[in-house]
Image 1: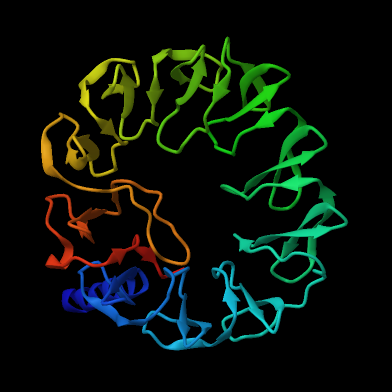
Image 2: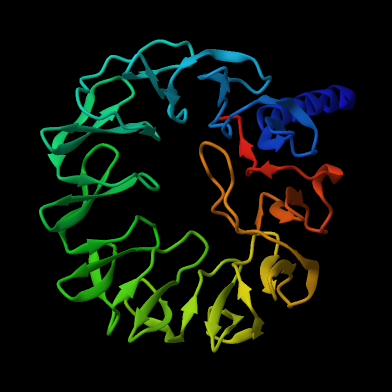
Length: 378
């Protein structure tokens, strides 16, 4: 009986491993291919141009035309398109014979009422424009929301900022008003709160209430890792909560977000780290500093290069790398600086690679370029 359960467990683990495959786009000898998290090639370099995977599929070029491959490197959509976007919600925008269309992985065209500009799907919703007004389109090709707004911004966590005239509010993916259009400015959705401006007054909307922030003249979006976000007053930056309170007074020249309990802060030409009580945990001694990742390491800059420290300030990976240069793929997704899912994308001696938390190079190999790993099970 135990042997039977062990075999079943092994089977489930193998299925999960297959389904949870992550791949990264890399460039070697001027050709693009894809590696797995072991540093092995899942798809050998063979494309002159390619993109990172968007779910199960990635755009690649053959000759002068674009198509889409699967995680085995097989063509799912043959290269016959002049331009392509990212797959999302089961559809992708492609340009062929001067006509944009939404198609699925079988190449079937989605019938829609779109007559003007085509917009990408994002989590089951696409924008729809008609007569200078914006609405929402569903993956069934039908309108979720008739053209109603002057502006709809991209959905984030299921909600989008909208504007009519000078007034901003927020809607959900069903087109229902979530925050009334009565604000001069509004931030992106977070369950921690949404910053907004009424007249000249800044505050945070939480539980349908606008909590004013005394003397604030700018607020940044909340993130998923802290109940605090940063705000500015009289050219100095501190941290607030969603009740409208200054938790950490605005005394810093620059700050970055809290993650893993610490935030980088800048004063007098150097960066340090504070905790959510405003206590200095790591002294101001770094030329530059980024947020801590979930593995407890943060990128810090010494002279012109970057290394990684732990939460006690101990150097774990020496400052020998660049981390900020942009990638070369069609769809650049490399805004993350530092560790992401256990690996850090870095550059050394004009070559790119990935480091693990001990500073070892993934697969012992460097490339012309690498992009972030992407989960292909979606």
